[in-house]
Image (tube, rainbow, N blue to C red; front, side, top):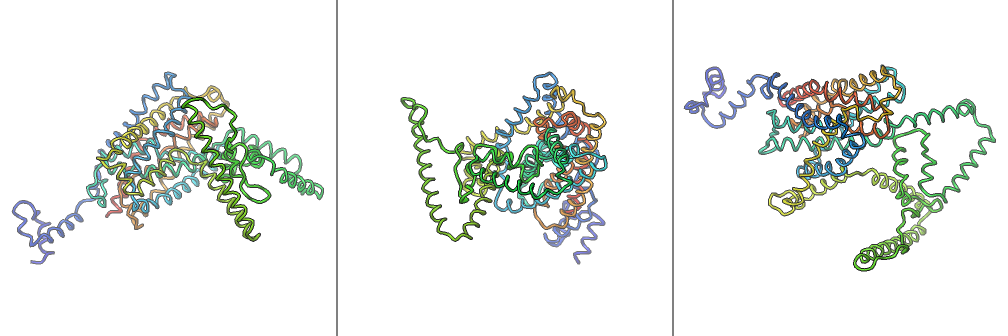
Amino acid sequence: MPLSYRLARAVNTFDPFNGQSFTNMASYTDRAVFDVFKKNQSPSHASHPDFGHLILLVFEAVLEVVCVSLPGYIVARQGMFDAEAQKFVANLNVMLFTPCLIFTKLASQLTAQKLIELGVIPFIFVVQTLVSYLCSVGVSKAFGFKRRPRNFVVAMGVFGNSNSLPISLVISLSKTLKGLHWDRVPGDNDDEVAARGILYLLIFQQLGQLVRWSWGYHVLLAPASKYAEEEAGRNSLAEQGRYQDEPSQDERRELLADVDDNTSEGDHRDAPSATESEYGSGSATPVNRTQYASSTNTPSSSVLALDGANGQPKLGTISSFPLSDEQPIPKGPKGWWVRLQRSVRRLFHTLSEKISSGGRKVFATLPQGMQKVLRKVHHAISRFLHGLWEFMNPPLWAMLAAIVVASIPPLQHLFFSPGSFVSNSVTRAVAQSGGVAVPLILVVLGANLARNTLPQEETQSSDDPKEERKLLIAALVSRMLLPTVIMAPILALTAKYVPISILDDPIFIIVCFLLTGAPSALQLAQICQINNVYMGAMSRLLFQSYVVWILPSTLILVMLALEVVEWAAA
């Protein structure tokens, strides 16, 4: 009997694999083909629950976040968790608990193959950021905002929450939704799904941190005084006719003389003062130079300054090692450590002097053309390394350590093998500290929703309530509506037709959709507190985003993600 005839007869009559009917099929191969045939005949939408049950599951996930955030709100309303305490807890979380979470999740899940597959995440992040930026700019123009409110709307639209709320939702959805297991992972379970989701979120989070604390902190959410200084500077130049008239020959000579004098005097100045003269607070705030302006005003910046005469690096007086024994050395064992420190400092200083002397001698023997090229290369590398060092923070160091551990299988086995000594002591302690990160962020979220924690000068500010309302509407549309409308088709087509294995992971698609329409990042509230920028509007935005619109928004995003997963796998 032909196989097609037997399959058609089985489908039209009964299941031949129940009970004794299995003998009607010729072989196990026929049974496998029948399973595929029957799977294709199954009704649609069978891979996820119905709409009513999905509402219940999403409501459970959101309610979990609300229950963890509610104590922070109550404590803040009682006056025991003010703005300064919120800053302290947020900084403590960033400095200690979040790095522990990053290390345990990334180092235990990453492999060399996964690192290659995760390369698609930066491209998706760039596309999401670009789409959100264009939406924010368009909405700002539609509302007729000027520069400062427009930058606020852009910051609210570009920087979405990729930490607290999405992590809690992913953990909750991984245990409630069925069909999220990845067939490429043998023995996949709910814990593995949650771990992969957190891994994806952490990578998106760190990419967002790079832009948030540079462009967002220094440009988009700059203090109001910076805009006033820039406007005053423009008005002063306009009064002097700098914009209308060309400078005369005498003025040009004076300007050139001033530049020459400043250049000659710059060799005798320290690096911080030179940086301040170049990037003053009243000047414009371009992204690529503001980072250096904020980072080079530190004592360590003089290490990387170049000598104007020969282009060689020189040590500043602030950052050089103290070699003189000005303070007396304590007697007894306490003085041993001081003597050891000074000996090590002298040793490093002697070695650095010898290496620098030898390098200068070799450099002097090179042709002039090669010397100029090497000066430029050294200057570029020094600025890059200095900016990278200043930019690194504990979460980024934790991510780097996790990549190192994951790239060395014996080291990864040492840290995460169930029976090893390091796993039972160090790794377990780090994991316990990491478990505090998400609840602590949610507690701070609840405290941020209490408006009584705002400073008195902000609550009594003269901001127009109508403008604040317009800012609120523009920020919500730019963050939670328009990016979802634009990114949903892009993500669907990417999951369907781009041949990258990570796009087949259902939890990755859910993560992408959750980040597309996630509320504004909680760290923006911290930046607004630091720079005193639209704190009233920020507080109202947090309430609207995380209390009013979070349930319908999350429900729509999860439904879209599940539909895309089902359509891409069809």
